[in-house]
Amino acid sequence: MNDIQNRVSRCFANVFPDLPDSELPKVSMASLARWDSIAQVTLLAAVAEEFSIDFTAEDFEELTSFALITDYVTAKVSRG
Image (cartoon, rainbow, N blue to C red):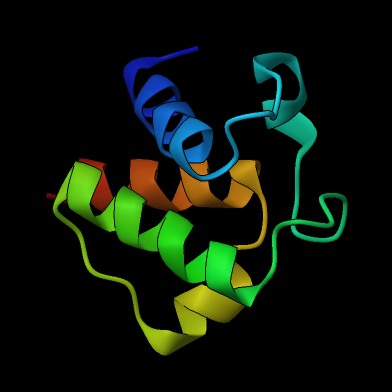
């Protein structure tokens, strides 16, 4: 894992402490029953704080997996 993936995984660990690291690459809102709308808000708030970025309302609807969140953050960070 690269630095961004490690930092995103720490955000996931704070919201989903029982989720094994080995499941992170494939985890999504559809595959994890406890990833509900409240968890989504909490998770993206943690990611926003970790990376000092902002999310739009559309982002909350679209960023529904570890992979999508990591790709989004990587793109935002690389753009500055």
